[in-house]
Length: 301
Image (cartoon, rainbow, N blue to C red; front, side, top):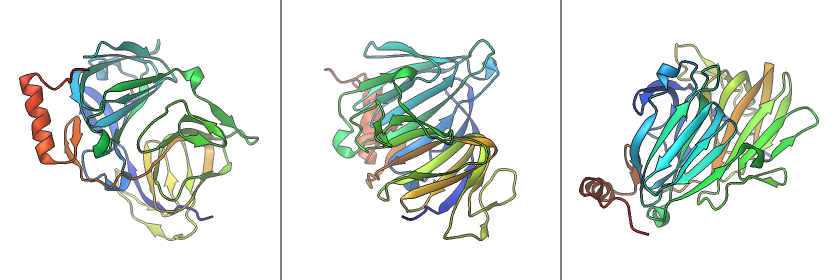
């Protein structure tokens, strides 16, 4: 067994999306080959309704899957295929845009005005770029979890962990998407297949991701300056990218640590990306936007 070294630690960056939603972007719209098959991760956590209530009005997607995980508040959604619904706290929507849809997502805070969730984009292989769109809506009670004797809790959104399988099925990159809570002071070893790219996103507490092979301090791109060590000291809104290995080891801090642990098999295909559309070639991108202009973007089923 080999512990995955920490390749980098960065802080999620403030950005504005949709009709003026203020959020933090962990990665995306840049060099994302190290995260392949994943393209983007946004943390839309806010306690000021004026910073998120305008939402994400009608916009297109093609060639990707968007995964929305809500922790507080709710997100109402609708699309050009007639689908409608609302995601509540703990719910997940895994949307395969495929050949193309137009949709909207409108967040609403809880009674205290809090809105919190994540959206992850996963790329589709060239063979499935133009597949039929589909949804997998999963309510919180449907998501299995594993609770260890030490109090560690793992919610399994997609993939398999400790013999339990998440409810999201049939995803091309065979990803694993876990929501992990490790209690204060506990050390935890989590398996991750060597063939996958893997990252963790810390959103509560703090801790250390152990790196036995490179114990010396190294500089990282943490906002506001400073350094982090190669053993992976992290805090809130930290994105931890791992190198190869088959285990991730985390040591929780005094307040415990909660993080997303996401891994997937790389597609290793060319990426042509503009806004919400991700294809393999520039010509495919031009065709997609031409279809948007002439009204043929949505394929007849």
